[in-house]
Image 1 (spheres, rainbow, N blue to C red):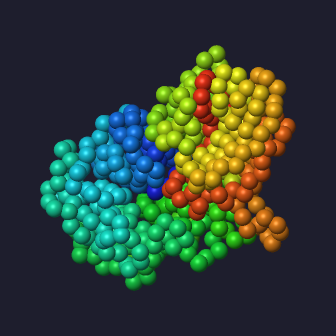
Image 2: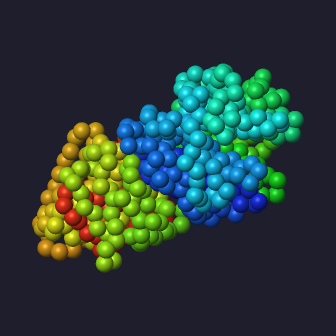
Image 3: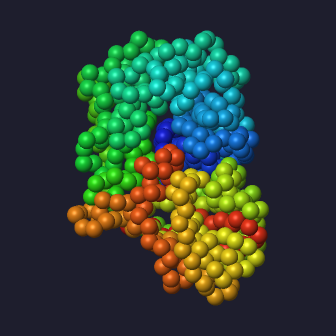
Length: 473
């Protein structure tokens, strides 16, 4: 439904319009807000955290950061509650009258000492935050949203259906029952959705006899790792489940280049229990993008805002660096999510006054790049401390750098069991061809996905353009 690195989706329906938010981890701006009136065409209308102090990521290590938000609406106010994990501000709730922003500075809720917070209101108006504390039972606490103060001691709520580590809880009222939806089984191939119901938001809870109610584990579904779901009303009174998943490639379906994405599943109700169906993977249309405007909400930077990394001067994006490389927690890098399994990304760069180029980042120790310095272009591939390089010489001035990502064959031919195929090209010279398994969700394990973009490591580097072409797949 929303391709590319968009995990842990949460959705709310307000006056016939859907608003959806996802995790961003170490990237800023954080917490993208997407809008749709038909669940088919989605537009990113903004981000919740557009000011660094809202989430305080400066010293948060990878894979920490902005984890698993929930978006809700009540009495004219939109709420997004989230945990900034491994440092930062902890559990914070943001508010806005317009989901496009601006959003509030945020109110911390110190009593929530876990992850994946949900927000729901009881029949008497009590605000409940329900959250996970890996690998223990789901927990809950009533809070004062205005001050962030707890109104009680946090307490254990439900230990799950028996699968590993219940997380990602969401509470709903439907008819006479309250439903507690959770993810279980870890966020890899065993990921699953389970549900319980009870008479109040505090329980007691009856586990669905058919838990887990949704999982792709052991199936041949082209979408795997299904879990971390949120329930929402669909067209004509139907029910839908928005959830994360991955699209693994190749014969063995072992490696997922794009990380965890957002999908939707239809839900049937049987004997008062939700029965989601496995999602259907429709063909993804082609898409292109070509703007250097860093105010566009789809641009990302690592632990800083894109507009603090570079600026457009004379129609070119200029980045001035201080010796910091892509290995650093705060590189001089701006990028966009890779959204298609088949994609080409290119730029024309002038590195006569510095060092920089075109990169694809998963984390500080998992990236590949084409780096220009004067008349030399170096292809670099970094994997968990191991680095390999290839070099060529190019004419002075603008040089075209290009990354090409292509899915592997799905039959028994050579290369079918690896990841996608990645080519690093300078001008008309192919410097390197890589097996993309090493820059996939399963190997990098940073919880994010591929972000492709422009960077500098030293001096001043300017870019004439940035082109992304994806699909169709």
